[in-house]
Every structure is written in C-alpha cells, then in structure tokens.
Image (cartoon, rainbow, N blue to C red):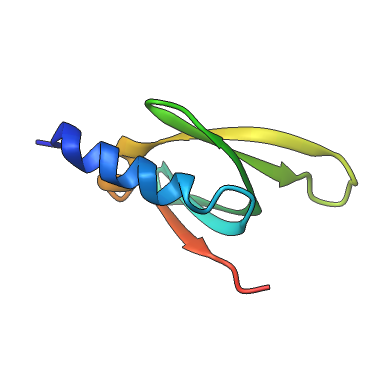
Length: 82
C-alpha cells in the first residue's frame, strides 16, 4: 500500500524541479509505451503537469501525471541534462 508520506515526499521532490526538462516514459498497457520530453509546469496535491511539444509541430500541450503512477512504476521520470 502506498503511504501518504511517500506521496508528500515525491511531491516535494518534483516541486523542487519545476521548470526543468524531464523525460517521461509512460506504460499505456498491452506493451504500449510512450516517451515524452517536456518541462514540469506545476504540482498539485495528487498530480503534476508537464508541458510537452507535439511531434512535428511547434505547439505545446499539457499532460498530467499522478504521483501514484510514479510510485507504482507505471510512469518513469528522469531529469534531462541541458
């Protein structure tokens, strides 16, 4: 079971990196994996927002991820070195 303290710690860690570029690998089920690179925009009590550039276009979209997805390893987050 995921403890509330684990979510608070993870939220603080992500909040410390707001504005930085990250690479996100999300498991979508049935052997489908998406990999996006974007900038952490903001954090909320149960989700965080990443701004991702659309492939081939110069437009951006906001994608939200939950902290529980990170803790259960459905989403993997890594910082990009600029």
